[in-house]
Image (cartoon, rainbow, N blue to C red; front, side, top):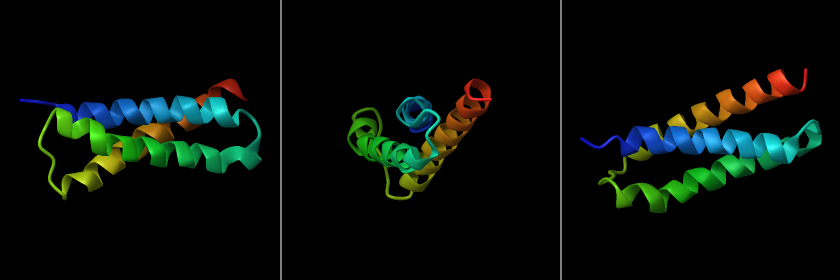
Length: 84
């Protein structure tokens, strides 16, 4: 059994959170760039995940949510940990 539908979105979410933090740092006016990073990495999965596993249309909601959740958790954690 392949775990690509779960593992790849979580790793991409983690990566998006770290990149978003590095781009925005402590300047709150750059927060939209963090969201753009998230959207780009969700889109990149459209080409990455089908190489490992067959994807149906209904799977993209879960993939997007897992990526968003990972991104949000990592970005908020880094903002609170390193900027407080």
